[in-house]
View 1: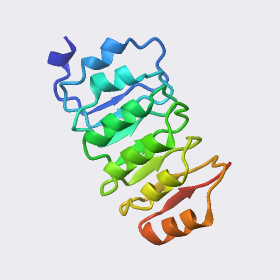
View 2: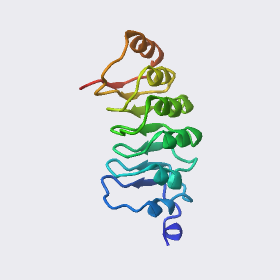
View 3: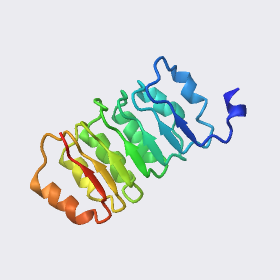
Length: 164
């Protein structure tokens, strides 16, 4: 089976895969996966619960159907270095802030393009002292206080995307 054949698997990419069955991801929960990219694959909370372990450092979950339930789980697991939640329409400012706050000391890349974030998330982002890449594109509103706080508190920032 999958467990015996791929015991040393550390990275899994399932981008734009259609027809993925939820139990499939459960096969990887006992692996030492550190990286998972499922951009464009329709994942739900139950899929994340099945496969996310405490080993993860890089997660790209863009365009999935996850909710704050998954984000609260991610806040308790691993030490995330990269997190992509772009185009996840079912997550809220509270969920994003929770996972960003939980990983503020390790997060280096954060992509939250088109997400429903507000000042709570931006305050959490301002606490990410290791952040180098930040995608806040397609933002609708942000106040000057939030921008100023981020500008002062993100000295390592190399890339900032605020495009529409």
